[in-house]
Image (cartoon, rainbow, N blue to C red):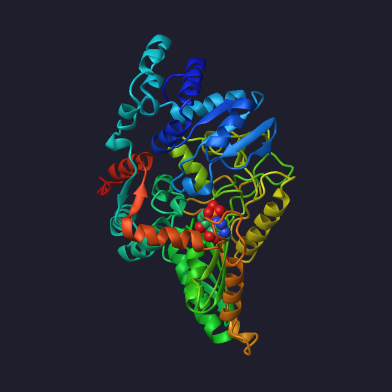
Length: 497
Ligand SMILES: NC(=O)c1ccc[n+]([C@@H]2O[C@H](COP(=O)([O-])OP(=O)(O)OC[C@H]3O[C@@H](n4cnc5c(N)ncnc54)[C@H](O)[C@@H]3O)[C@@H](O)[C@H]2O)c1
């Protein structure tokens, strides 16, 4: 991390904010975000000019964030009003966002020096020169889907996975990248690399069915990554539901299986309603009123088939955000918005390192605070754990040993998959037409902003998928560097040059 973001630099930022649009664009383009302790008057002035979202009340002040549409690549600008709000954390995040002097220089050359005099001098540098200061290494680059898929396969096979299983796994992972779930695609290689090195997972594992009935099965994943076992479980649930009308499959002795919605969409493509859940690999979420973690991010996915519209596909962590979104901010040296992470005392923080570097930080259950409904996210997390672990016999996350590694070669994660054939219920009205009607009604809702029509779940991902199938998968520089290190360490060919 570079030098301290001293008070002088804060002054300089304010001077640049005399041209807020230029500053804002540069911040988004080059730095990925900023955090600044603005006065109430400055905030009032700036929010009239800049496209920040409606302010949210937080402990000790107000919090402003950019709208979702410019957050697609994890870019973000954050402002906090009131000097009472976590001043240490604000300075820390200024350092995280701008600590790299190259990044500072790209906003304005004056910010890359501590000499106050020369900063003032530099402020007269023509803005155009600053805007043209564009280093290739600092850019997000786009890669064809096939290149990203092959890069994933290269690493998985280098770690000992069979080619057939690496193909299945990379298909699920690259699908996440293609539809914009950047937290669960190629970025996971950096995490899996550590787990492989520590013998937390068995890359060569082959899942086996240990017991089954006409409407159920239990699969043992052999300690492998969860993708192959989950595809087997989903295919089993589909085949049994097609015969019996509905079927559920539980999986134990597994590990991370990526984006949950991949499996429910497999079911919906076969005309079945799909539900899937998984326990997480570690604990990061404190229950409402608690300050120690007891749950993971525990996602749930639901998909329903349609005729006129795309498959309805709800796929969500039961936390305010998926942990991967916090990890991606950390990787790129950016702050997280208030409400994603609490510090060790249960207070909101913008520092992702408090969670990712195990400094006692916790993630919030969906809802963020009790006032805004975190008890409901906490309840959903409990439901996911009951479905994923109590049925399968997988490791229970709430207990003493949940954060430790009880058995080498496995993380003993549990999954649950349920497939329902809608035809077993009301044959007089086709199920798909009912779902289509609901989706059409929702699309017809009068929007708040005419430029942002009402969507249904799955559509944000469909929109990104259509765009990335044409223009490729964007990979930011921090992640590229980490994958290059992984390849070097694993003796796998690095393709993201
Ligand atoms: N394997 C694991 O252990 C694990 C753990 C946590 C999360 N995850 C995965 O992380 C991914 C991201 O989770 P997340 O909670 O950050 O997702 P998210 O918040 O980005 O989206 C959640 C859902 O909301 C929908 N949505 C988004 N904007 C919408 C709008 N304007 N109108 C209607 N619907 C909208 C999306 O289509 C999606 O179905 C998921 O694929 C999840 O399965 C996996």
